[in-house]
Amino acid sequence: MEALLIAAPFVSAFLYALASMFLKRAANSGIGPAAMCFCFNAFVSAVYAPVLLLTYDSGTAEMLWIVGTCTVLFLLGQICTYLCVYVGDVSIMNPVMGAKVLVVALIAYLVVGIPMPSAWVWAAFICAAAIFTMGFSGLKDAGRTFATVVMALLTCLFYGTVDVVMQLYAPKMGVLFFISALSVSLLPASLPLLPWALKDFKRGAGAGVKWLYAGIPMIVIQDILFCLSLSLSKGGAVAVNILYSTRGLWSIFLVWALGAHFANREALDAGRGAFLRRTAGAFMLLISVVMVLVCE
Image (tube, rainbow, N blue to C red; front, top):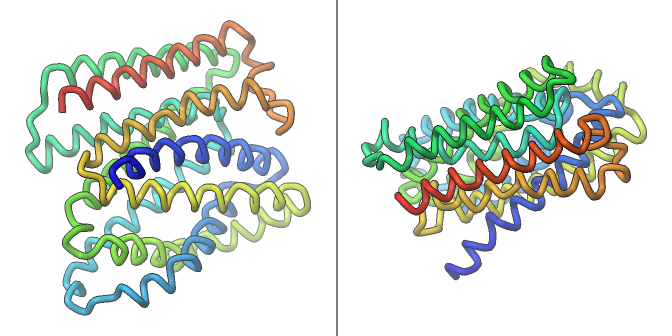
């Protein structure tokens, strides 16, 4: 069982990287972040609605405000993620999102009171250096690179907070109930995005919608694997995020190897040297994440 929980976030990382390629292709065809967000939430709500009915416990009603808070934070993280996909480079976005494990560690330190080893400080410096290295690799379009990094870091903040709250309260409320309640509540929470989503669907009619419908199920599947691993693994939120952070390396590999098949020009536009610097930055981020795990 523990072996499966360790494998789950690693598989999730690959699926996330692959799904990002599909969604970037959809974005290039006219599908905007509102459509991506709304489509995901509609899909995941439909998947989890039966689970919510089966796991509902009236005794947890007084704790539903926790689910509501996580819903808002998760929706903000989604918006930042899909904005990142729409305007940025996958080969920068996903590696930078690996910094979420440091955010989780910091939140755990500030909120829960988990001691912060000195190695975590060094890990933070390495993380910052990694982000600078990847940002430096995109100076041909500095504005887009900066926007990608900022959106990715905001995503880390929102999702990292949800991770810690889930680790604290999901076992008390019931793991499946917590995950399903959060997932189902995302659809009504995203209804204000519907007018923009409909415009996005019209712009991306045809090829864009096909790529979107191919990528969204992958995101949902990897999200299910990640949430189950996060809630059930004895390693905790930090350990699971470490394995999940390999999605940055997967993204760079997929862009380099399969970019042409997805009409993705990141590798060509950035150049060989810049892409090697992005790879180096992704490895540095992974090192910082491992440091947090070893010294947890």
